[in-house]
Image (cartoon, rainbow, N blue to C red; front, top):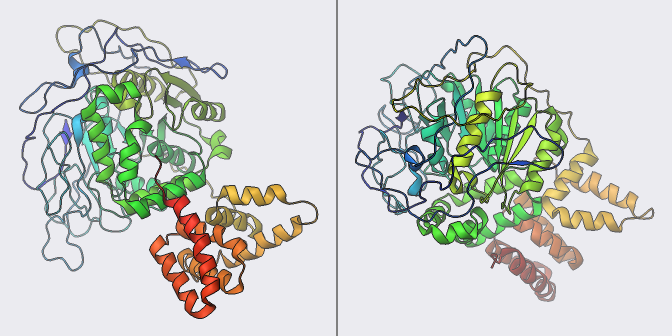
Length: 594
């Protein structure tokens, strides 16, 4: 059962033009075995590309390709162990109220770019949203993503339909949709950066037979309101606020890339809310902070086109991309229709995300799933997660890159089904068993009810926040965020007994005291710093601070204006030398990857 929200229900109009064919090969038994040493137990499955397109959707077409795939039978679920008395979460219809300055009660349309739903859309009772002025043309599928603005509960008003929601009040929440039985335990699924909830479409038919699937969009993605989140923790807080409004207290969680980071963060800060965890194409630290901050600089300067153009090579194996041009175009359109400011904020959030030292505190059963050919967050990062999380198991998916749920949907569905069916129990100490495939009966079998409880959690306090950094630790953090890891590492590498005290003084006083004050934002501090360096003639520091200014949000045009201002008040020769230094840095930092 699928639910979306809009005032006037309309059927899905357009059929699918193309996409992957059913997964070839023998029935899948892609399940993770207990982790043994550094090597993963691979998930068997047919690697490679899909030679044929999707069958058409819409107009009462049958379900996903996997549902009618010849030779593939669904996994037999394990027999329930112990009593099962689930208490379904209260899915409240939240009244829609008018924002300040808006006339009348009624739902408010959420601003933001229109997503390209693409060739992975789930068939079922969906509602197409009304096209808006300036709306981007859809990708391979013409079905629009439903949009609606959900206000915080207030005075009683007529109930609104459930489904794709986005809050405008405080605390801000996330745009979401439900699929599956209303009385089933809730499984939350999170997307990757630059994608929408449609990246999980091919898992929904199978998973929604057993769970109430809750999918959400990142801010500014998929037509969601463009309220940027400054950190992974803030995304987690917005997700919990959304679930709290629906009465969902305890849930399973699966997330891809930044979606996995949100799940790991929740397992650390709110361990009583997460029953079981799956981290797909995720990492305890995503690349380097410098890499993601530079990506933000590129988007701020050039827009999202460079990211859209390179998305297919980051997300898919070459064979899959060559065989599936419709899905490649869908991926490109998803990135193009994302709000640039929200994309940049997500890059900043990933730059600051680092839980390597906290992995041992994740206390829920965890599946770490990664494509064997993932070049973004590959098997090395997955093994780091497995080595650090006490109850974690690793599964490699052959023939898949970063978006394994799109490229190898059947294998990923089997892995998630097996993990959440066996690990989502009160007693989670047992390893995940390998269950044999059983031929499906001709008539529909009784739906499997997983052994899980979704009930109000016990009054367990949230994880205690760490003590505040002292001035040196805070200074080190801010210095790295502003100047970059590469610059700070280079300075530290050259420090010796003669200079180390001076470097500590700079870190503690300049960065831990002045740069950490709340009186000015970092953009303004960068403007002042650039001006001071030109005025004093200290051009040896201008390159590092030009790079810092770009990462603090100044555009090349704004830096040019700062230097023109210094030419008037500091002299033409000083400004001319500064232009030469800044020009080189700006070219290096803003040139998109080839």
